[in-house]
Length: 192
Image (cartoon, rainbow, N blue to C red; front, side, top):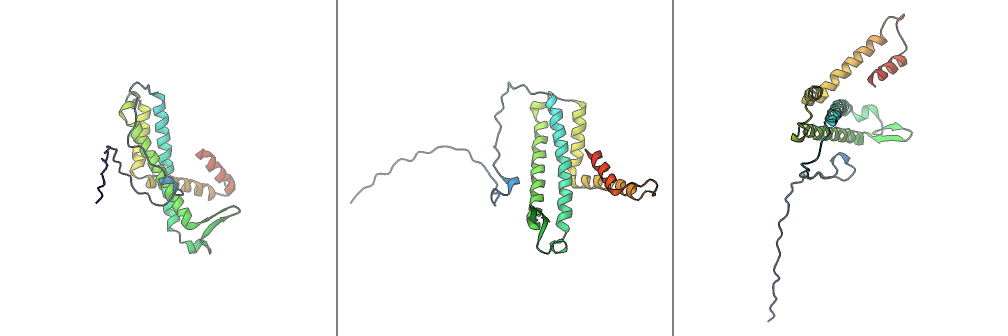
């Protein structure tokens, strides 16, 4: 009989992380990568209070984009493929995409903007930014809070106002009427 000596097993404690299975592959870019579970904050770091205003503007712009992206996705997903394409694709001359892929990309855009907005919102409200309490920042935050409640509804209201303004200009009396391209150009310039 042969006796086999068992080796002692070393046990090492480790970090337990709950990572949601995102499925798919790297082409699903909005869900790529893993976030760290905590931050390594240096207590002596001097935060620049002026940057909080910039962060608030970034968050507000991201929420604007999120609302419009949600509106676009909602409208695009309601269109039946067969009503707009015989081959399930749109575009031409180098920019051809399958409609199902476009729907997925819109959803990726929505998810990415939502995640970015949430991250910046959490950062602005973190304890280490209490040094930068300004009235203007609070106004940005209040506006952002209103948009966060329903970004799609906010975007649709803005779009309706723009469409009404455009229609008033297009259907103005002939003496005041400008060409449609001039009106659209002016409208786009106002948005910048």
